[in-house]
Image 1 (cartoon, helix red, strand yellow):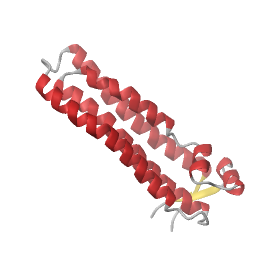
Image 2 (cartoon, one colour):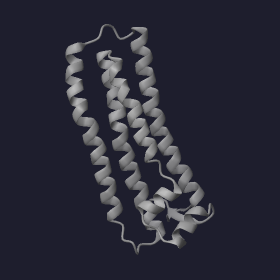
Image 3 (cartoon, one colour):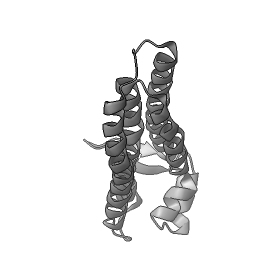
Image 4 (cartoon, helix red, strand yellow):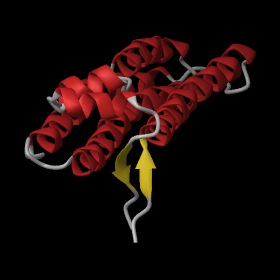
Length: 168
């Protein structure tokens, strides 16, 4: 039997996952920068850097667009008359997919920087972090994206209200 989840638990879980993804990108970029600055990665590989540059020019916008499109697809597939529990489960899935697609380019550019020993790739990470932070799921953002009514918005604001259930 699925376990009921309160608003407080839901937002704690969503924000914990979001923070973990944010920290993973930040930590990998920091490690990459440190290793490159210390010279532990050897000399820069310019030929490979040019190849990675081309790949990054495709992966970053493509991944961000795919995340946005898939998120919108999941959100639009939620019937407006569905119960709040169903809407919130679908939102959780859609948000996780979108954030994963936003995280991929951040991790990829850090790996490219480590492989090529070029710290210039890391300039992209703060831009991705800003976009990532802008899409952080808050009560008002969720209410707007799911087009929730006043009664459902009130449940989101009440920390003890049951708004979702675990997937089992």
